[in-house]
Length: 228
Image (cartoon, rainbow, N blue to C red; front, side):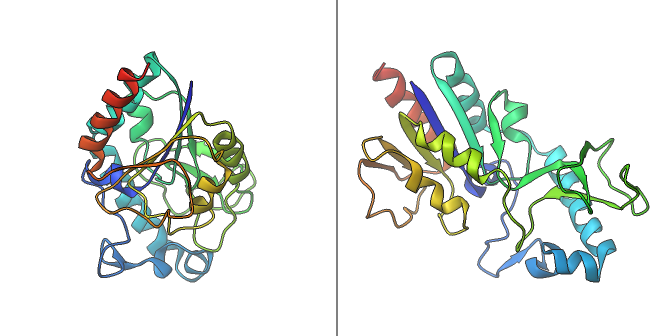
């Protein structure tokens, strides 16, 4: 049985990582359009680099929580594929082996000339003056607002083959990621783990688990294992 899991900021929040979608619209005190757009990079690359260096340090000091761990452990019993909107590496550190990052991963850098030219970061910082092999500045391997999402077609194909679909900690507000549920077969059970249920009235076979990520994934584990 193939279980496809789409995760958002809610699963990483339980590890202490904040989402920019806080009530004040800021991300760690920054307006997202000052630090997370190609225009911001052109305008003030030092500020953008500093911002992501700080976020990277937070990610590296964070630990996977029980929701991450349970998803990894479920690989013993099921074919689990994770698609994440998050730029952290907590799924991988928890032990999940099939993770597709829609919006990049902060532990890598990329050429600002050729996005698919990426490098693992040695340490926790990208320094101004660090260049890719083409001679251009390295930037975070993160998809910014206004940039295309290169992994979206692969993710859509994964969703189209789901026997079970699970949505964890995402409001389905950021496109194109929010549209992935449209590729899930109509007959496929769709579990939504979130204290606040996103607007999914038009979809069939919805099962709401109105809990935070850790408690909700624990509940899901019991449901899946009991249904084997």
